[in-house]
Structures are given as structure tokens and as C-alpha cells.
Length: 222
Image 1 (tube, rainbow, N blue to C red):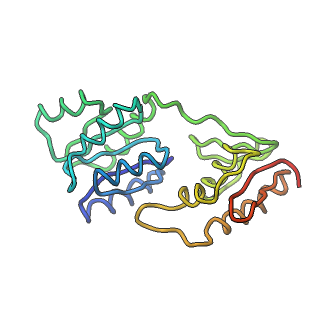
Image 2 (tube, rainbow, N blue to C red):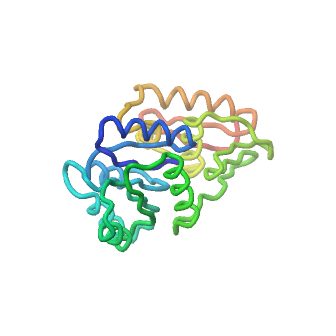
């Protein structure tokens, strides 16, 4: 599941990404209010880990914007601001949890999982087409009910194709899912992962059809 992390510390940010990815999360890292708002507009995240002291503003601006739009995305504030009044302000402002630096990574992981469990955003349901099923919440891929291994990026592409089944999924949408905000994907990454998925899905009776220069659609049949 993909989360957004706002952290401007050049040492702490990458360390958090590494630790959260080891715990099973896909993480996009941004370092400011405007970057965070742009990312939230572009991508559907499962949760937000939000620093407050950002170079271009207060992280509370991000939280207010989310709640103003009636977005129930689980939010954990992760900040050095530890006074009681600041914690109360953050929770009253719409945060699901509040963690003060310094902290233990294990605690952040546990609080993140708990916030997602109790969040108002429903867990994604299983996506099915023909003999294939993908469960985004459990990150499992199966054919005829048998779970099979599937690398994370191939799973991201397959999820988008299943959500748009029989409809065109623009190539730009797939590139966005594969990329991260600090590590651009290669120019042919979409073609590489689509090619790999084609081979996996052909035996299950599904085909990925390309529309040159536009995108791809997932259909039943050869």
C-alpha cells in the first residue's frame, strides 16, 4: 500500500523511507507543503505521515486542506512539536494520531497500521477479471484461487489495469504509479512491466492490448 511521507530533513527522510519500505509500505517522500498538496492531488494514498515544520509552511496547512475537502485519509503527525497544546491542536485539526520526535520506527509502523485499520477510507476490495484476482490490501495475486508471487511494480500496473478493465488506462497514469518523487522511472519502464505481465496473464486467459501512444487496456481473450 502506498503512503505519502512529508519530511524535509535530508538524513531522516531517506532513513524513514527505508524503514517503512522494509515494513511493507510503498513510500513517496516530499519535503514541503506545496509538494505534499500536489502529490495528494495526483495520487490516491492509503495514509499520510505529516511533519509540521516544513520549509515552505506549516504542515497543518496540508491537514486543513485535506479535511476541508472531506478527505478521510488517515493522517499521522510526526513532529518535534511536543507541547500539550500543540498535540491537542493537531488532533483537533483532524489528525488520526500524533507522534513526537525522537521516536522508535517500530512505534510509527504500529501506529500507521492502526490508523489505516480504523480509518474511514475503506480497504480496497478484491479486483477480479476472469480467472485472475488481485487483493490490494493483502498485496496478493492469484489465478484460479492459487496465490502466485508478483513483484510490487508489476502489481501496481496490474491493479490499475484491473480497475480500468476493458477501458483504456493512459500510459501517463501507469508511469505515475511506477515512479516516485525522488527517483524517476526509465522511459521504457511501462513497456517492460507490461511485457512481463502479458506473459504471466496469457496462461490465465487475459490479454493486455496496447493503443499506440495512448495506453493499455486489460481484456479477456487471447
